[in-house]
Length: 120
Image (cartoon, rainbow, N blue to C red; front, side, top):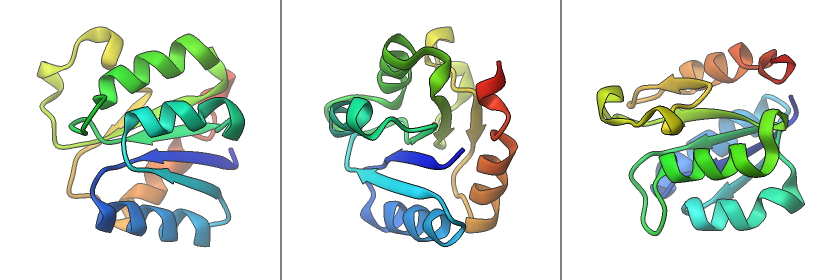
């Protein structure tokens, strides 16, 4: 897993995620929301999409569904959000979830745990 697309509307969190993952050797692209991330999906061809749930224009759940439709098992998904999992529809479930607040160490650990995700 080398390429990570981040959809996060909070600029501070997006910057923390980008710095953490870039310093760990990942190629990272940050998008401000799900629509921007979906627009970049095919050209960037990420191994992993990390998304917040509550964002303008498109929720993280909608982005997760769209990623699965377009890229199937080629791209794993990680939901980084404080949203109650009971509020998610089954088709909005990501391959993994990290509950906010997320420290850089937890983020990196969550990403590393998904490195085998593409094998499924």
